[in-house]
Image 1: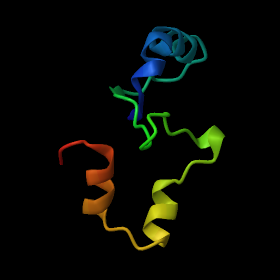
Image 2 (image 1 turned 30 degrees about the vertical axis):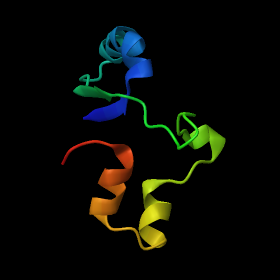
Image 3 (image 1 turned 45 degrees about the vertical axis):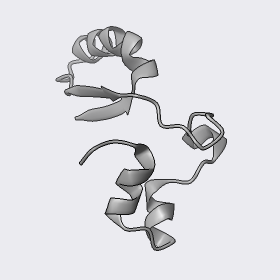
Length: 73
């Protein structure tokens, strides 16, 4: 299962096509709304935003992380 931001949804068909042409079984895809910081900027690994791992290492509980995203459990 691939879980990624909805900004990547338009490229999913191309990814599935390439995976099929290369002999791979395409995985399932789930796209979620973008997660943003308090300033409204989207969080991204390329911007070196805090990762789930870093949050865990800093003592945040799973419940606190879910609350940060605005998603329901």
